[in-house]
Amino acid sequence: MATERTQVGIIGSGPSGLFLSQLLHLNGIDNVVLERRSREYVLGRVRAGVLEQGTVNLMREAGVQARMEREGLPHDGFNIALDGELHRMDLKARVGGSVMIYGQTELTRDLMDARTEAGGRLLYEAEGVGIEGLEDDRAILRYRHDGADHTLECDFIAGCDGYYGPSRQAIPKDVLREYERIYPFGWMGLLSATRPIAEELVYARHPRGFALCSMRSQTRSRYYVQCSKDDRVEEWSDDRFWDELRSRLPGDLAATLETGPSIEKGIAPLRSYVAEPLRYKRLFLAGDAGHIVPPTGAKGLNLAASDIHYLSRAMIAWYHENNAALLDSYSDNCLRRIWKAERFSWWMTNLLHTFPDTNPFEHRMRDAELDYLFSSEAMMTAVAENYIGLPY
Ligand code: RFL
Ligand code: PHB
Image 1 (cartoon, helix red, strand yellow):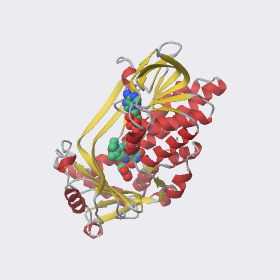
Image 2 (cartoon, rainbow, N blue to C red):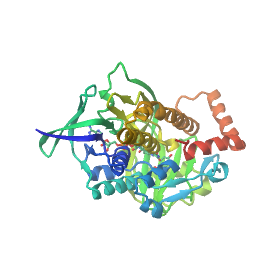
Image 3 (tube, rainbow, N blue to C red):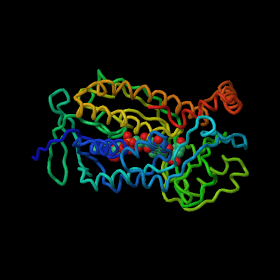
Image 4 (cartoon, helix red, strand yellow):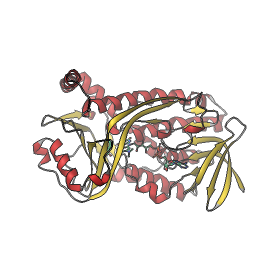
């Protein structure tokens, strides 16, 4: 069995794992990334599309901003559609900020390419990753790769392995606290090679259910409709999807919808989830491994980026200055921001979706909340402040 050594062992090559690997590398900290899937599989997953300013800054810090700056679409606002009308949330005017439309797939590719060019150790199709020795002087990662068993000794392990990965399970049950809300619906998403319906994103509230019009570029559209939690993709033909989307948008906007064959289609469940603490001894959880938000506020990828902002700084302070203070405050620092993003995502989800068991009073409460939102400068400013991302 081959035994190797590194400073930081990273599980998962999603945005959290890749950002961390690249930032540590740029600061002279040795690391290895173990990923269960193939490189192609990871790159094929269509997910997030909206980057907060903090995530854009992290791309720059990681030195992988060139393509994003060429191809990304800065957006100064977004729209909420209700009762046949569009209400614009002006991010620039209210809080002087904007977001960047740039797909998670592209961000992942940019980071992967940078790691590969720099000769980084990224091991794809690493099987059976197991965590040991968290209480000892060195933590150990065991895995199988290319038909052989391997052992990797590390100072620290970064659990960047998403909601279903093994890292969180390595925290003893009497230490881990979990908070969860599962929503009684999912999102059916479709990517098509068509012109986006509008220049900015449109979040639509409609009695038939929520809908979202997003994009990846001027020629790639990404649309979502709220669906039943038990629906299967096979039940959603492209035609059914387009009809449903059209029916949930204001009529004059729906009339301009350009449709085409789907390039990708998938159903995502909606969940709010937070694990506390995000550190156990030599293990640090980051991104979806530690928390999940429903996608309505576009916060998941951005929270992964802010976790890595804190974790990379903490590890750099430890290796460069022998200072453990930021490692010790990592979990608290992240959680303060995470809970606020959880609140915003939960709030937007409640506001814009149709719930199967809403009573008439709750209905009126939601109508009043929307009416208040569209008529109050203060409320629109608060929404804009949250949407562009709270400060780190
Ligand atoms: P990831 O991307 O899930 O990566 C985890 C990686 O760990 C690997 N892994 C393992 N590797 C080794 N051994 C094991 N045993 C392993 N188990 C798992 C996995 O294969 C994977 O490669 O987590 P990360 O890096 O924390 O990144 C989080 C983001 O991917 C996620 O929060 C966002 O995609 C959420 N999200 C959105 N976030 C936004 O900020 N803005 C958006 O607009 C947005 N839209 C979305 C979204 C997520 C969606 N879905 C499908 C859940 C839209 C959708 C539809
Ligand atoms: C996306 O483009 O995939 C997207 C945009 C905004 C969201 C969620 C997903 O809130």
